[in-house]
Length: 196
Image (cartoon, rainbow, N blue to C red; front, side):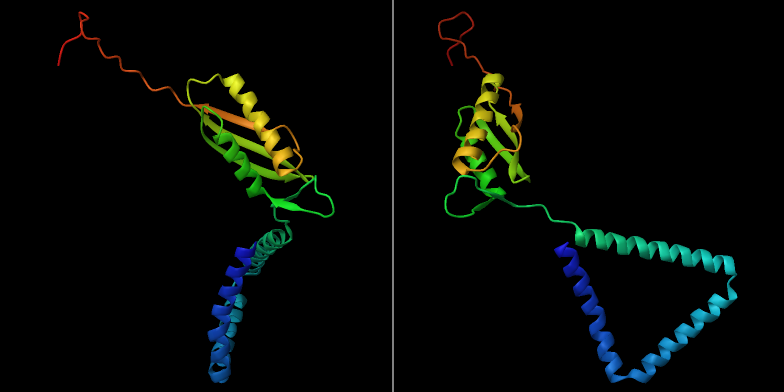
């Protein structure tokens, strides 16, 4: 919502600045032009039938209400929390960013044998962390053993190294890359082997 607020303020200032300066410099011609436009609008509304005037009024009122309600909801909605409280700290209150949690998890997971790449996401739920991890592993690893090791590492990093609580068991998505095909070369002296 901060970005939308800035855009609306900038647009409002870009419109208000020249209009305000023009009103200060030449108020009579500008107010006269505005008055003529309003008189033209009133005369047009007088010539339109009452039912179409009412229908147009209802449509514009609904559009205005939707825009205002949307802006109100966006303004009042709480932004997602980016900090979580560290549990095991004596003598004070410490909060750590979710990026710190995800960076530690990714670093530790990439140290495991067979892990090629790791990405993690974290969100705050009731002053605890919910973690989702995507891990790309080599194709020759045993998936159940690797998955168990990944869950243990995530739990250890979050609860012991960073010091925050897990809101739920970590969600892990594994993707094993296929092992590269092995090209066999003929052995010299074998019937299929030829000297190059």
